[in-house]
Image (tube, rainbow, N blue to C red; front, side, top):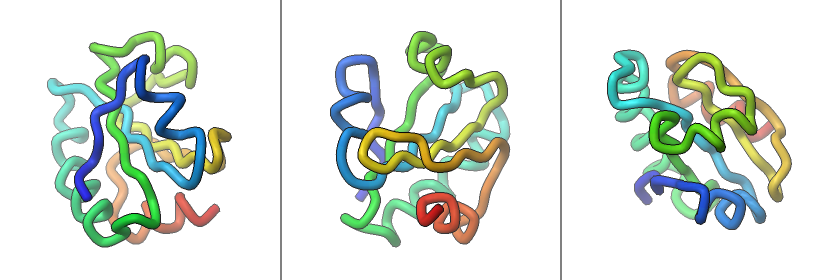
Length: 102
């Protein structure tokens, strides 16, 4: 299952139930481009167990501000709409699994 691009219309609905991992990123960010294939591998491996979303901070500054995103990539795990963990910087698949199981 590929990562879903989230925007202000879809964000709250997507993270509202279950476990969701959201990658806050931008197209110009080198580390974000390094994170992308890792995130896709994580999404593929986790299948339906975890939803995976991406928020482009340049296209959705309101969402980025709401979650105090100052550095990217920032990855936030949500459970039933509540933030349970976050990390900043490129993170491997094992680290992403730890994040969503916090």
